[in-house]
Length: 113
Image (cartoon, rainbow, N blue to C red):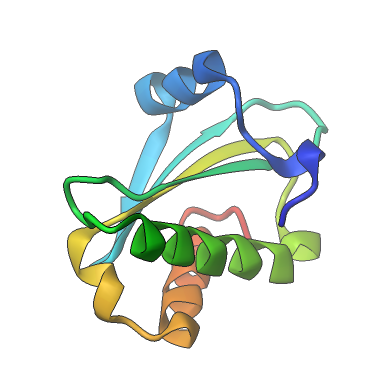
């Protein structure tokens, strides 16, 4: 579980990331990010759509894997970012280790890590 400081929870902040932010994409994940320029810790939200993965158990499992991946390299993440990690339909078939590696590659591609 991420600390409250690192969670992006406000719907206003989330819509700002979608509207003003940039996007990086891989085969199984999409990353929306917005740099605020402030020296606050980076904040994250995780989205796995019901249309893509119908079972709640699977959606929650994937979000837990992604959260633990971000928590694992939280100390290396640049401050001031608001990030939304959005899952794609075929991510359900991936092993957790591969999913975390793909997330790390996306964060590096976006220069957040």
